[in-house]
Length: 114
Length: 113
Image (cartoon, rainbow over all chains, first blue to last red; front, side, top):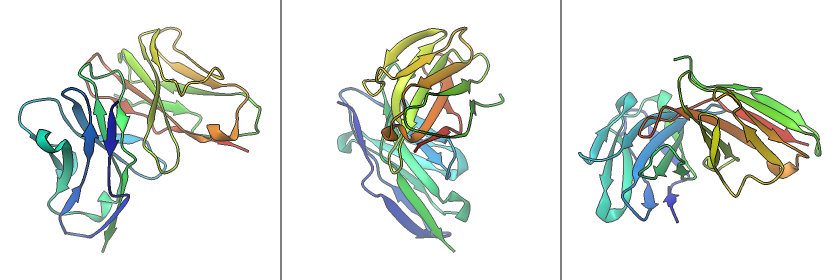
């Protein structure tokens, strides 16, 4: 069965510091991988996605993620965090016939210290 | 694109009542999805439509839940005889065909008291 694990429930970083949010997945075939961000009480916004090709993908708001097949990981990174990045981040995996359904992790809440 | 629109944004209802949520997808998006998100969890897939056809339903979608997309445009999600366990945010999303980005609405919060 498909599953996504985000080991960190909460992460606190200082503004200007680098960020890495972890995501591990379990999937029986080549997955499509996604990172979404959610502000309190709001819907989800897509940050980036990986389908194939270059394993380092760039997204919006200065985020990037690296797909590592050998580690079943798709970690999200940002070199310098801004206070406006405080939100909840979700990693998700989808089937090759992307568009049917996504399986989400439980999320990581990012807090930014000024 | 005007985005995925959901209505109402918040609903408080008494246990046993019926509630209905509406979703208007981005125009020309063929696929429409419903997800449910409870506090502290990621969204969970409920069902999806391609045009007016409901192609898949999760086991989470009990007999009390029904979703429709009568003309392949907007969709409704009805919950009958609500229970406290139904309290959650119900997210609608839409996309063009396979391989395209899924856009989420801002969700409809349901509180069953």
